[in-house]
Length: 113
Image (cartoon, rainbow, N blue to C red; front, side, top):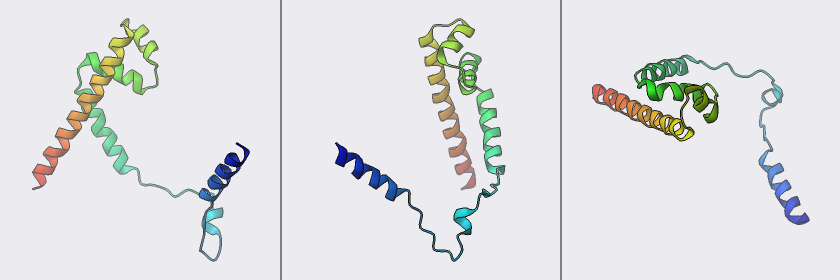
């Protein structure tokens, strides 16, 4: 067991090694993160919000509460629903969102052709 632990430790140590071929070690020692352009992600989020608003209230409310970090039991208590119903509604909301997103982007791909 001791040897297995040592071997695994050495493997992990090798996997975390960074090789820098630059003359100065600026990139490794730099503490400043690159600034990312978040325009794309904010546009996607706006699209998702509009798609979520199209969902039926019975599945939208539990889904949004779950997204905001509420636990299943807390949602069930707040909405006065059984726990299984809350889980089902969140599952159906995810499924419907997936379908809406799929339809939206296949329609956009067809429009580009």
